[in-house]
Length: 384
Image: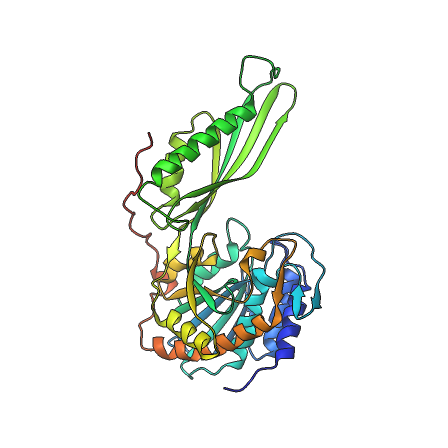
């Protein structure tokens, strides 16, 4: 396989990281990526959701389609963009413009059969509970394989992500003196949290490990008073295993929380792929082919895999350069040699993947996927 222009790859990454794209304000970065895609030979557009979309290869509806789904938005926080000692610093360098740029360069410079196409998408809004960009992709594409652009490190790929449910609990009561006989509104919120955590411990019985149990953490806690009414607001983030349906969990929490006002969002089912399959095999062979030690892993966070996996019903993993422990931190940075190695891996893996799936029947078109999945059997124990 011919080499690729490493300078151009670094220039693309530097330019995209230098273009701020906090969720909801991605337009400039999307326009930049579409422009760079066109220069690289993609048929590039901005779709109705605001995503950057670049397509290379066959235009036939019967072509084998591999979707490379990254996200272009970032969390807030300005980090001065600079390259120092082979490391590029900047917000989004790891999460997840590094993987997205690796997708773009790899797709533009690899060779695939004439009966195949690669679609690279920089989705908007992944860092929000509703993930509008990936939701649009879910409803309009049915690829034969999908790679999610998230940092895994160049030798690793993720075969699963936990699910999610956000619970916003509000407690109100008449204002009173702190020395009075009534518990404060903050104490009521804390008591509710302790009860929910105790129930989660019961629901987790029989399950072990971070990936296979429900985890809870307080994301926000705020109290206020207008002198007449005291209010406490608590947001509880729940990370869910594959056996936990977020809608069922919502009902259980709601039924045991009559003393509070609850709102729920961010419903996401967990997903886990088999360790062996055409996509995992292609990545493993490519990683090993350049001297790496391929490793399949699972993540306790969420990604756009949670949004699209059930609808796509095709081989799906997450892959990309970068250290995911730097996500959302003030120290976000990416090692440029690792970024370039990940491009080499993708350039080698994509042709092998296309060949291995070209004879597999594709999933039904989006218009034919209208009925919801069958209900899951409840795996919860009754709370005590």
